Amino acid sequence: MAVTRKAAGFSLIEVVISMTILAVGLLGFISLYGTGFKALKGSSVRTTALRLAQDKMETLRHERPGHITEAHYTKGEDPGKGLLISWSRVPSEENDNIWLISVEVTWTNQEGQSKKVVLKSFRSN
Image (cartoon, rainbow, N blue to C red; front, side, top):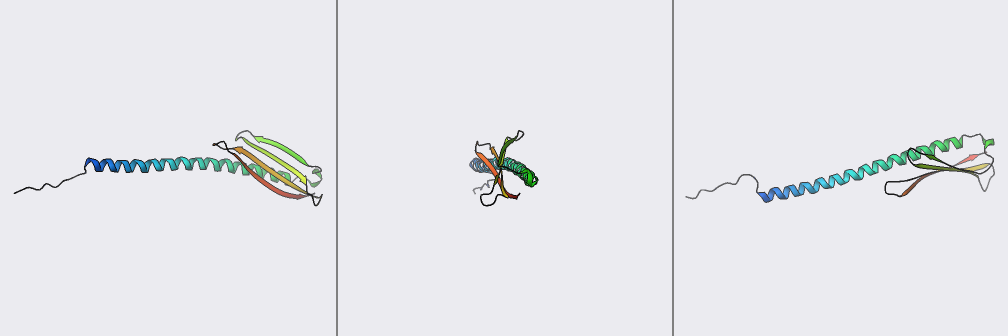
């Protein structure tokens, strides 16, 4: 009478295959983590640039109307984040009592690409 033996456990090939699948999954997850971190950093700088542009726009829009007498172009820099801010106030082509105010914040991201936020508004004199 032959005794049948029941195999218990996993074979070596099953273990190797499952470890390979697990390693590929973990590598994919780790690469997504890095991509998410870059996106988070980029959105932080973009939010700071937008806040800076909004603050400057509010300052320029709330100046006394008599104070705005000629076209004005200026640049400034936020040294902490490497943001360059520029703004202009130019009279409208249709009406001398209306001024176009433009604020632009530029920066270079981690990949070396130039990015910018532009806000435009009108102000009556």
